Image (tube, rainbow, N blue to C red):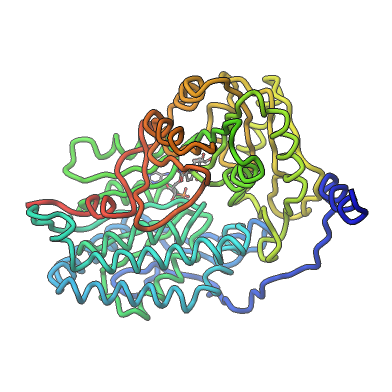
Length: 491
Ligand code: NDP
């Protein structure tokens, strides 16, 4: 080993890679001191007369005050959406498409500003909001703009019609991207929407209200009500909605399903996951290690389809874990606005407590923990990348969604055993298979009870590709032609 290589491997092993700071400027985004609700194309003061601060999880600094929408505010937003629907659904589809194209173009033009806002409010690394969230959000609007005047071709002979007013509730892990997944297909099909962003990440949705004004979205077509979980509950209960689209925890998803029982309201649920990332002994190991890291440490592991259960073929377990630990030591945790950061801040104190509790349970139940040496900032909420080895199927860390940068490693001997272990979960959102053999990927994909199965890659998204779950990961699909169906009725 040459001197340079030796130094490199020592640095990698100790995690002592030094990078000069490369901060993205935050001057590109300016927040109002206080935001109202976006109803009927205007910013309106909440009837509730209540606001709450939204905080940067990396610094605990308050960024702005946001309205807490109460039942009257929600009713007003639904009324505005109903009124908007009369006009919007009668628009020529090609004219609706133009509005969606304009939104997509403006998202591209304002991408830097929105990416900085997303990282400030949510804590995710700027390289992810800049290179993943924003391009994909724009791509969704472009994609569904293309479908707006071709619905008859998407569903030949079925006379597609819009549903009406869609109530949409999104979580805090991909605030703007989930907004795009919800709003783009709904509008393309001629519906209007009332969207509730998560309590901890409302700012990009409020900036999106400004994008709507810029794109000349007609009044009432997009309405945004901020608030906590109670605002979401009011929205689900509101008279005058025709559809609920929810992304979030399985627990709240079940509560929404109960609430809607007996009402003639369409429902799609995209809930939690505990994906198996399955690595066979014939795979390209270094490539698999990159996929494993991307699968679980992307967005601090705040990803419903995260590859949080690593199933490794027994014969390569030790080699793979060694390589994985070496790679983990090079991950940089810290300032989300630094362009070199790999792992940003945990989204909220509540989420950090939930991760900490489950990690403690992992150690107590007897799994072996490894965290590379890394210095965590003093302010804000942080969690070091973590891997557990020696995990049993019965451990809580193998069964429950941790929603943090925590990986559990299990082993298998045969493909049948891999399938059995992968499917041994209440969830069924995604899975990954790493092997040299294409036929084995297809064999596995046939047997895995997961909505998405990635082959020799992980966490790849495309607006043309449907996404959704089996079992307690929910039902309905977002993305692709399937994503249109969730916003249409057929005459
Ligand atoms: P929630 O399911 O509570 O949040 C998702 C969205 O639903 C948010 O906008 C939330 O509002 C809203 N909401 C909360 N309660 C209600 C209700 N009763 N009726 C209607 N809407 C409601 O997730 P948490 O933020 O509490 O996270 C808890 C766990 O859920 C995480 O640890 C993770 O395991 C999982 N999760 C999974 C996600 C996924 O994409 N599959 C996304 C987020 C979380 P508000 O934020 O204002 O409370």
